[in-house]
Length: 342
Ligand SMILES: Nc1nc2c(ncn2[C@@H]2O[C@H](COP(=O)(O)OP(=O)(O)OP(=O)(O)O)[C@@H](O)[C@H]2O)c(=O)[nH]1
Ligand SMILES: [Mg+2]
Image (tube, rainbow, N blue to C red; front, side):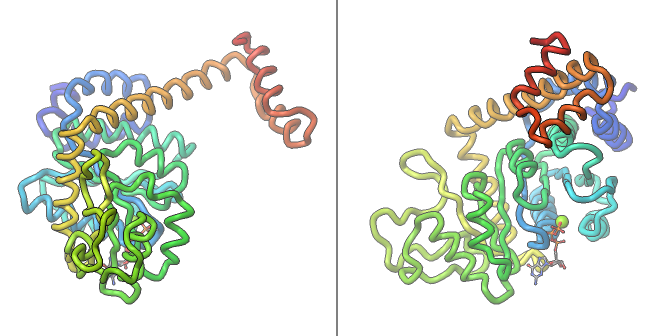
């Protein structure tokens, strides 16, 4: 049986091999992805992002269990742009392995950067395709932080959960990172700790919902704030809005105890339904396709450029730009011209 057939038949050995292949990004990988592509598009991809230590791994673990309880299969990808290791060397994943090990309905893969962050985003998108083709119903992708690479990785997800935790200067972090733009759902994790309600209120205020005094914070796992008290026009319920938009719900969770996690899972499913029922899914798929093609073209064009230039030529220009002897636009034009590409 060839690798594609093995993978489509759900053989684990094939899966692990296929993932290693696409991580290495050789010609074989491209042939494999081409063969798998017609079999993709079924799995729902959930990005889980947030500041270090907010409990993303624990939450992903708990979500995987909540999905397994409903019979869904789950692929997990842990992306750590800061770690030089890959292949399950991350602490959070060891915790996870112990918990979910031996369940054939769960597959876990850790990925770390070996080259550029852009390369990591590309590799992550490809591994998602492999897990999708292998038939995993839900694919959970954990990324640390909220930098450019994470935003790119989030663009590969259908549903993005931003995880906040009390005591991390949540408001400042959230606003700085522009999480409102990428969040479909908010999880205020570590809700067993002081300050969780404050984090919920801060998020609600960022969403333009309600002066803090008007409403009490929600108990763990209710899915959102209490909407009744002090409610007036403009204080919308979370989820789908009359104008077709989606207002990200805020769920308090205690990932270590699994509290609120089923509510979070159900919100993911609601969001998936919302995407299907509106034109949003098609729009996201188009955005994903554009981003994938963009990455590949950038990589390829860079390769082409480099093969047309003498070794070290780009570095020379970098130095001259740094010394202010030339500006980057002129340098780029010069390099393209030297390579015969412009
Ligand atoms: N009190 C409390 N601790 C939690 C909760 N969830 C996670 N933790 C703890 O927080 C610590 C960090 O959890 P992780 O799941 O590794 O957090 P993470 O966001 O994946 O961390 P990085 O991947 O390093 O960014 C661990 O010690 C967890 O046990 C929670 O709901 N309540
Ligand atoms: Mg983690």
